[in-house]
Length: 115
Image 1 (cartoon, one colour):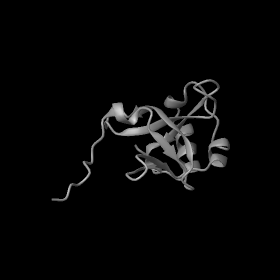
Image 2: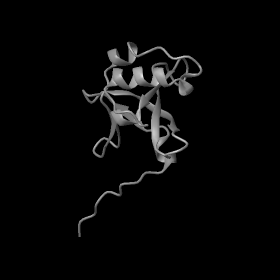
Image 3: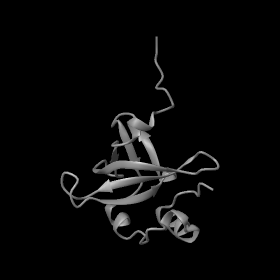
């Protein structure tokens, strides 16, 4: 009998999930998700990276469309390099209410819009 991996994942399993860059190197963990209220679709995974043991860690919202789950690694592949993270559009506290910023960040990461 063959078992097929289930296509769903609990949000508790996504929080803290490892993220790996195109080269397979660990780049951070998912801190939390941002969900579109109307569609219910995940818009962003806010990735924590850098720092040591949670100190000095930075967080950046990465478009969900730029990520895919890697069964072998048990984490998410992000099609983003460290250089792309560092050169990403700066964000203010109101980034989640600024459609122009969202357009820039989706373009920067080559991700489809979620809206």
